[in-house]
Length: 283
Image (cartoon, rainbow, N blue to C red; front, side, top):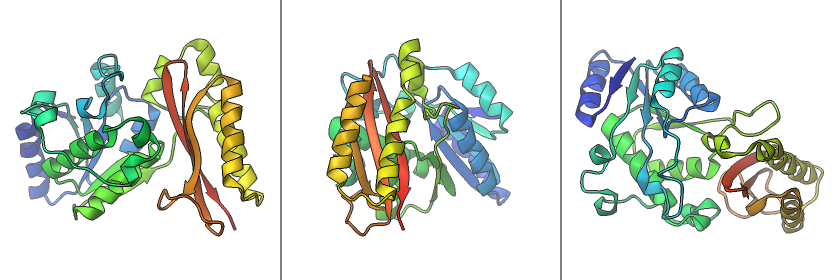
């Protein structure tokens, strides 16, 4: 596995693949990798000749009171894991390389509408940071394919919209959520949970499944279902930000005759923010 620490070094390496007429898949990450990330790499191998993983804790997607300074950085362990799944190139740039003028002085990419709801409403500016760094990665790598996890479903929708709006020539692939044996969606932030919180955390997925069951059974009072689910989370000890049923394809409020829905949730457990989602298909 080749490790590149600068944009120039990375682009020289990618040029050699293109000269050999090889396709390139990109897997953007912030490190502290778990099996969910490694599954993205495995999927990327199915869609391209060479797999590039970027590892960059992006400061522009963190708010003033969020966990940028404490976000776990585990480069040695991450490198070993990526080597085991046959990653071709690991890109580990510095913030100065990505934002030479500083994040606040860099041109930003903004996707309207989709970034104002759900996590975007709770974390103003978060998705501008995501779309800016992802677009920079797309343009500097000129990858043919990029793979993202569906756990961050809103993020995936925002990136797909950005690619469509800006005519970026890249194929976006969504990879299903990888879960622990007890149902908890794998996340780098799960390591923040205390032992008691970790035992409680899978109940978030259980509540999502109860919403799914109600809708599939034919219940259509979505607001009532959402309210009941939010109360369940509160009684369990979560501090829910939102739990919402939406059209899976547009993230718009669902119509009564929509058949492809999704329930999306975000909740604090202690100081840890958990997000999860579950598709709902109705006949």
